[in-house]
Image 1 (cartoon, protein in one colour):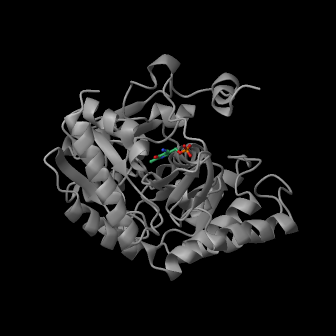
Image 2 (cartoon, helix red, strand yellow):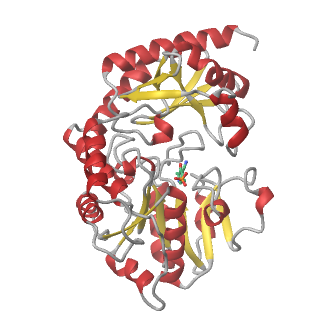
Image 3 (cartoon, helix red, strand yellow):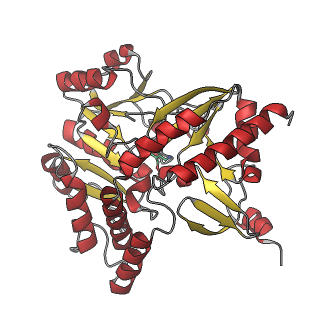
Length: 399
Ligand code: PMP
């Protein structure tokens, strides 16, 4: 039989010609272990997913317990499923008014689709405003609001009436008119290479949306649930959107997405006509049980505060002439290097130094540092030492 790696390349649809090809057999806390017994500190968290650490006992116990009770029963929205209800109630207890209703789906992309549809139904308008270098997923609606044509240009026609503003440029406010149903924005742009909003930018979007009756959607797929040092990134800026999109860490390592709005707005999906969004597996009970256990763990251990503390340590320790800038909040960090070539070299060489890091979709000279929020001081010190050795080696190497 062919080696597993060859069968992976032969039998599975690929996303690029250069997959990382790590063959992980076990993961625990912040560490990944491969088939040959090598261990790696995970500085990616499966792209902002594994916030409460790999194989978190409370999460795995919740999964096992739910699997023993029931798995799929019925499409979303028909039967009363306690894990969904309990998780929704807990999440809503963390959100201010007007939030009061959660629609669970399968992924970030599906949550974006739901949010865009909800805003259209609410306003009866066609237009959408999104931002340069924003990322919202890979389905058609999500692709239509993607902040770059690079990955979408082969798939047109996309949704019409989408206009793209430049993040942090106040000219974008002029695009928000009475024809626009929604503005979709990441409060901190993640795949842009972790770009924070300028003071007043989100506030101005809020004001302009209020003036025009446009729905403001914050995509918090990467920034939500403690990663940036607060429960949700919007809390840093004091700007409350109309719809929040969540995914990534929401399922505690299981696939789960959600869009959240006021109960009044959400109701429009169930009337005139009903079945405004249908999803077979959305809010899968095992995923909701895992997500709730993960959120409870995160709150009890104040992982958001840990994210802020460790962030400071990482920023202080990562001092190297090849590092041009460190951007971000909490444990959503971008380390900017001298060039795209250097960043790509660092990512490729990282496993040899016992760490995994990643690039960003739209900022190729920067590397992502986003470990599980459970990372402690010692692990962070170790990760920084390895990262500095790696950067030193990459800076001195031609290829
Ligand atoms: N929004 C943001 C901000 C994301 O980062 C992502 C995924 N990287 C998505 C939406 C799409 O999520 P998914 O891959 O689960 O569809």
